[in-house]
Amino acid sequence: MELEIVCGYEGSNPQSPDRVDRLGEDAVRVSPESEDGDSNYKFAFDITVKNHAEAARPLNLDVDWQEPPGVGTMYMACRESIYLQHSGSTWQEIRGQLDKDHVRFRLEIPPGESRVGLHPPFGRRELEAFFEQAGTLEGAKRISFGQTAEGRPLEAAVLPGLDREETCLLAIGRFHPYESAGSYCVWGILDLLAGARGEALRERHTFVLVPVANPNGVAHGLCKRTAWGGVNLSAEGSDSNDPTACALRGLIAGVAVASQRPVLLDAHGWMNREDGLWVYRAGLEQAILEQLEEDLFPHAWRTYVRSAAAPDRFTGDLRSYAALRLGMETVVISIPWFGRSPELMRRIGAAVMEAALRALP
Ligand SMILES: [Zn+2]
Image (tube, rainbow, N blue to C red; front, top):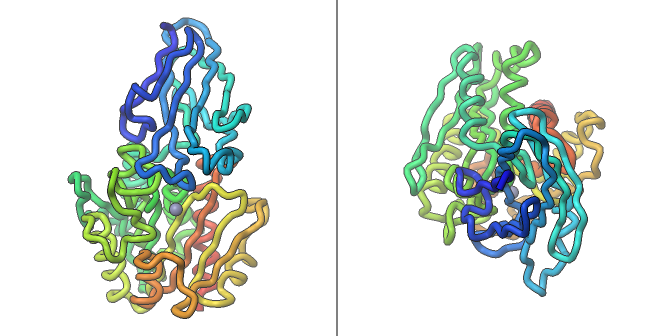
């Protein structure tokens, strides 16, 4: 076979070759998997295609999302396109043909290796590039604040305020492992701080950046949890004994007690057509939105204002823990891909961070 489908590597979904069915020389059916069957988070798909031939070859790819009858096509429109990257070039979005709970794509695979997924991935390689970039900034520290149940380090880049600390901004991405957008948003904050415009911010504020809050989930190509049978950090992290949840609580609490003005920015990447913004202070959502450039945010916004009187529907969610129990100013974003590039996602994270710092009292 000149086209080889590879899965089972860190971040791939499915992990098992049993979920790849060869339908012919140039045709394959792949069934992504979900650790808990929740269709509302079943948006992880990541395979590699190797073309061993000398010339490009077509690939008919059928992605079978295997939705239960009660769900049917409810989420299928969100899965209509995939991203493809050939040998480290830029990511290309490709639209497919919806057919019930399948999406069919006709791809041209150049010789060599192509990565194909629902979203551009952010795995260990991107995380190392992030820390390498962070390491070039004055005063930067790479810290480990815990370890996952499988022994992976939980790491943050700490950039102490160079002159003083008016604010300590803790930015966390990727409670939900499929939501690579959150990791790119956190990376974008670093981009801004590394550039000329970031100098003034770095003088006055401390930044603690965690691009990957759920390394086990990311490594296993999961959708929502820390493991098969694991915890949903976002919704259940404040009263879980999962080592990742415990470490995140420790980091959040540490920032909350050590800083005069602690701020949490929690970055997600849901699969809604709107961009999402949650705040815990009435009026803050408008103050943030007013500062954002429209060209970065062409979609409508869905905004939520939470408070002790109107908490999130989840008890035990980490953002309420930060906002309501620890008194941190807390801003949550959820930014979908839908054609956006990793570079654009980085600019979006930087823009929201800057807007939030300006909008907060
Ligand atoms: Zn999420």
